[in-house]
Image (cartoon, rainbow, N blue to C red; front, side, top):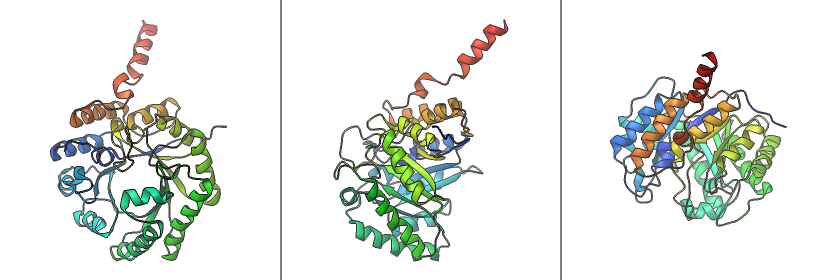
Length: 323
């Protein structure tokens, strides 16, 4: 039985998710141009950069310049990713980004070791150490989540019980510091999810934490992202991370074709066809997707950007009937 929401919120991550994995460095001006174009599509949140070690992620070496250069649009939240105190302080120093404290652990310790050279316990300790830093800057901790929530190339299947145990650690840290989480992201970091596992994991989190707003972060390496998003919609999930033109991928997944998030314009198209409001201008989004392809200089996975929406075909059909 479908439980489609009446509307969804799509969090755009293409500028960060996309440019972090490109083998060729993208000019800063081109990154800024794409962010400004995305700002005009109706998107309400755009993740523009990650503040990480440029030796590990060279594509983010110009993060400070990108943040200083884009044109903020009223009503749009511009966010960034950080993995430690140094990264957070860079984000805070910009004075141009929306800051929300986060506690995002990993359901897979093997991936955590590859991604951050860390262990589960150290990751918990690091997040606990960040809580006073957030407090000192007046930043509420409202966002939690798990990487590798559906499976891992290095650890294999991730049982639901393991997901719930890791989620309990996230909520425990928040409660220890008197913070109440509002959103919880389930990240399919290495694209192990299927529609059935999406329903199973989302259902388990919902049953344990009924007041939390689940976000799905779905990678498309195995071509399942849009199907998994549909499964999320069937479960009533109202928030999704997405990447314009399907840009991106995890640089630490260590497999060929480590694709980016579910494609933003494909997701918007599907939602509109299901009667689900996105408040996004699909035609403007398609233009931004074509710009993204020009910026990276190679073909991108997006489908709707190539096939277009059905708007002009429907208009032509109506014109034929009127005549």
